[in-house]
Image 1 (cartoon, rainbow, N blue to C red):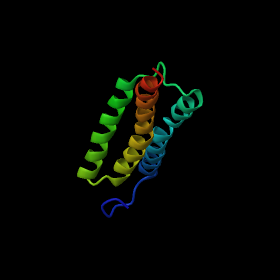
Image 2: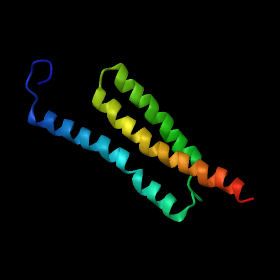
Image 3: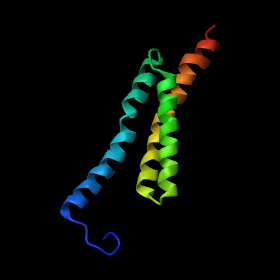
Length: 102
């Protein structure tokens, strides 16, 4: 129930789709994580892009908390974790590990 009013089937469908979309958004970064780890390289993967994603996700998560939309906040927290992992791997393989090999 939303504000004491029963949600229509359309609203329930949209809420379900929104929930699944939040989870899918976080899961879409996992193949990139596995690819970087498998290849032991982040060559060709843009750090600027992933840091940009992280900034957007961070402010979206904060917005969710601010407006008490905890589903949105939790979904974007998961995205920050998976996308952030990609960012950390890019930094490690492109900058830290490449400096160690010199």
